[in-house]
Image: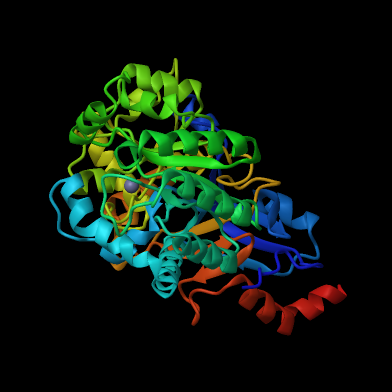
Length: 474
Ligand SMILES: [Zn+2]
């Protein structure tokens, strides 16, 4: 497989015009109004996959008299591409499987499905469909579980590379308490394989590697120890650690039995060097105060996955605990497909609102869309690279349709401002609410184009045939 060329020489200016919302700080911690920039008519100027300027159209446009390639969106809101902080691409083909408890659901559906990823052709098929789903929903970065086999890692990174998306994944480490068809043969071998894949993929284009013990019960202490050593060797090169934590009570009880001399679940990972600044923990529904303290001190990211938590009956994430002013924790949203029931981050926000309301806490649209974009980037320590529309950032952008259905268009007549409209969108949870997705400045998804999805090389080739020649001569 040949890597696709990224940012070909002489790539011209490109503009996106329309209503725009982007975040610059955490509205859980600061005055909401100071945390975002909102424009009724903005112009985003892009070159070589990066944003070079954003502001009111009337101020920015005159500075770029050569900028002819401008796409204008009406009845829409331009936002940073969404960030999915926790998703299992290998479970895409079993989304919506009837289940009861998490542990039974793993045995009955998740493990047998993941065992099929030994076959590269199957892995390729699923990776292809998964990436299409992400881009259709406006998600431009995801922190992804593959499974045991190198084939599952290669398939996702290869497909991500074709779109030039920034994806994070790695081999899943699991050497006990699961079927032989999925089990690592030895802790030592599993770590060697992880390091081989890490060297192959980390920082190849936009791809980033994560060391992924599935969760404490499916790794021997030896595997966790070696995983921690590997993580500590590569953490300063931007390698991640991604796992599950404190999802539900029966899981926590199992961890307590398996690791009786450790005080709490977080400390199991901490003991083995797995809790650090690039550690991302999925769920965190039932968390003790001392665990929040650790997650804060170690600057870990937490992925809130409400549709999965509701589907599997896990527990209720408490954002007010995570965002306690004295020790706030970095939080982003996760779909957790196949436990999650769809690939849409805005739809997760509607579920997050309901989960909070079960505890009589509400979650407004400002905080919600922050979690969907910049919050996710902060959870991944990428807040200076993605998750905002600002100069220097990578041009990963979604364009939400504010009139995605006839009924929604009618309902919007009775809203007063953009945050009321966004709240309606996330609550209605429509599946078709994203018009277009830009990845590194290329429109890789367009709802109204014949080829809805296009790879980076296809877009570059079509640009070479038509306007690029004129642009090069300018
Ligand atoms: Zn998960």
